[in-house]
Amino acid sequence: MNASFSTPTTLSPIIQPIPNRNNRFATTVPSCTASTFDPSSQISNNNHSPPLPNNIKDEARRHPAAAHDFTAKYVPFNAGFDSAESYSLDEIVYRSRSGGLLDVQHDMDALRRFDGAYWRSLFDSRVGKTTWPYGSGVWSKKEWVLPEIDPDDIVSAFEGNSNLFWAERFGKQFVGMKDLWVKHCGISHTGSFKDLGMTVLVSQVNRLRRLNRPLVGVGCASTGDTSAALSAYCASAGIPSIVFLPADKISTAQLIQPVSNGALVLSINTDFDGCMKLIREITAELPIYLANSLNSLRIEGQKTAAIEILQQFNWEVPDWVIVPGGNLGNIYAFYKGFKMCRDLGLVEKIPRLVCAQAANANPLYLYYKNGWKEFKAVKATSTFASAIQIGDPVSIDRAVHALKNSDGIVEEATEDELMDAMVQADSTGMFICPHTGVALTALIKLRKNGVIGPSERVVVVSTAHGLKFTQSKIDYHSGAIPGMGRFANPPVSVKADFGSVMDVLKDFLLSKSPKYK
Ligand SMILES: Cc1ncc(COP(=O)(O)O)c(C=O)c1O
Ligand SMILES: N[C@@H](CCOP(=O)(O)O)C(=O)O
Image (cartoon, rainbow, N blue to C red):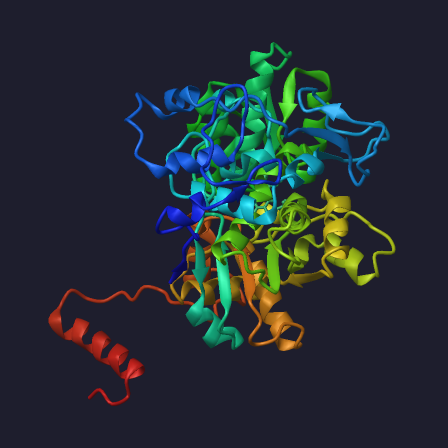
């Protein structure tokens, strides 16, 4: 069973009085004009079927939403609203003057002119439509993402709006829970949550190129998912992309994605951390824009997954959200999405966050365990959760902030644990990636030690599609991994005759139902 978005079944609730920006109630919803933009006017657009446009971008041009009050800028990470240091989003800047991280800061006073009920209705009204660009789960929250970008500059595959799966059987059978959910961010255009951030980053690059900023291409270091998303969105916009991949450390399915999308693919004889160091040096020298989550534009898109979860629960807040962590941008993105919803009155609290790491790549876990006393990067070793084989995460400060401010926890998963959890989840009808296995292991451990109660509502974030990681599943089920395979379900070779097939089937049926004779 999937939770559905709370799209109203009739239009009346969303054209009922909605506070306008003067906090008065409009009895009829004003229509959108070029000179004044009121997002409520977009709600009214759902009231009748418009004539069919030539295409959805033409239609968007006929309803321009250019003049508006919402703005955003870069500030040093964790700076207050009075920060003396800030940068326009049209500048090419990744680091603060002191060398720290940046954050996209929204004009919260402008957003606050609309109350929580208003934003909930607006976001709900956009789900499941093809209206450009709001049909995207990311751009349906445009005012909170990149408020000033022209819809014409947006590069979108209508990403987001991923399903929130009620993990009924896994919950009951493996963790004794009835309110367990999996947010399938990997069921997406390029098969991972990276699409959510990349649509934002590549759209802004598209705008910067139109503004004649000196940008020839976009580049990233990757363990396979960022490169897939970057190359797809760039290819869609006709922008050159360059990806730095650690040689022999990503899956074949992930490697063929940027190859297919026409990226320049550099296979480099180092690990992800080595590739990350190189791309940072290169982008400081050449007109190549940096697309890793060090670039805070990515976080703006990724945070919409948190908003979506609340929306899918009809704006009820789950008790826990568990996210697998590597370079650590995503755990902060979830925190930021939840926090904005609380600060703008859509909900009253935020969930507790859990970041789950592979034991072979666990610098955040070690930091947490030593009471946040001293952070040390580690040399990450090989893990089946290959996309999080990262020892020196660029967003460490963001992750610590997210966890400290959400009463968060960090857990880890050994190779055995993460693969068993993945295989068990698959046996209940999912087909998840090993990173989701890491997150499920964290859940199993937190249930065992009683930190998470049996009736709490928990969301496990699934970050990539299992089809990208079939080799690890094949190895597990075929017994090719020494010491692993407790829950293996290998294919049965059987002779092509009736008797042999009957023998196998009788054994199978007996094992399922002892009453069968
Ligand atoms: C499939 C998958 N899961 C989880 C992560 C971790 O996300 P983050 O790097 O934002 O912590 C990544 C990438 O790092 C990933 O590709
Ligand atoms: N798993 C990532 C690692 C890089 O993370 P990013 O979010 O900083 O780009 C990948 O797929 O490359």
